[in-house]
Image (cartoon, rainbow, N blue to C red; front, side, top):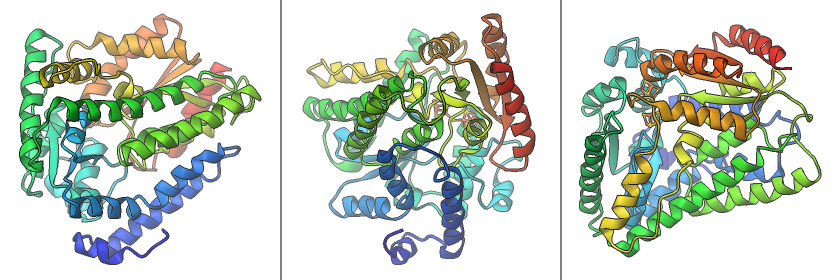
Length: 425
Ligand code: BJ8
């Protein structure tokens, strides 16, 4: 970190000693996993910088924005529409985390059989080590899986500013009507928080900023079709993770810069791994920073990840919002239509997700799929069995992995992944 931010963290109420310990582990993990990769694109230097300042400069920027009158809204799910937040001159940041923290305290609040993603968000809150959650003027929880839905009843007692958004569970007309009602209610809540009335011009601008961010990610994904792959799955995942933290306009520029470099690499047939390296599609639960365990295992076992069917990946970023409307009603309708397509496993039935996995295998010429389910994540673990069966019927080799954030199973996972990669050769 280029500057001393101790006073800033103290003012946010963070506990400095555990926070220092967290940053040390995060920095070491990044060094061991990311900086040891060979032949990385030079423009990934931007993401090295972002990671080195993820609790520093970025937090300072958010606090400066707050001083200037902007509001900061935190969320745990891709169903929270960033377009609406930006339209009210506010900033949306992701609050999901990918590491265990304060586990003993968390065990007093949540049942043991809660997924790591939920436990980790609680751990960062009760351990007082997350400057993002402490900077937020509003925290949005959403009724998706039962774990999240019920845990917000507990989180409500830990934070002063929780807003809960209800979400449909079925892709029906009634489900869409619910999403519409909830997005209109959210728009009103954001207007109340910011004191800004959202008009069509503002909404259009919000849509454009988010669409541009998604288009940059689409461009990056498209370049990963090449063999040899011009970028590692780890680096592409990092870009998808930073999507939720960075200033959206700067993020878009930085990803486009990487894409320019990757284009040249492809012309020179340059890649991160040799041509013909087995190509894997990763599918399943979202991976928040610093959850790099499985991608790291895969890419140190002789394979390259060419796509992520995940909310931190293509499930979250794939569809654009139609910006052709001219009224708030038309633009809100476009936002609702866009988000209603997200094929999260909380929906029942959820055939679109399976279709999307198959489509991605073909598009990125993957040789196999690794399905990643977090332990105790019922929606994705339940779906993993029919997904595996359907893929194998199409002769797409599939490996189902159930794991958590601990490093205890690394050896065992590596053995399984290596055997799977051998099979793909
Ligand atoms: S739209 S995937 S971001 S809910 S891993 S907490 S599902 S038990 S994260 Fe998600 Fe929104 Fe869906 Fe995407 Fe529950 Fe599973 Fe835990 Fe999960």
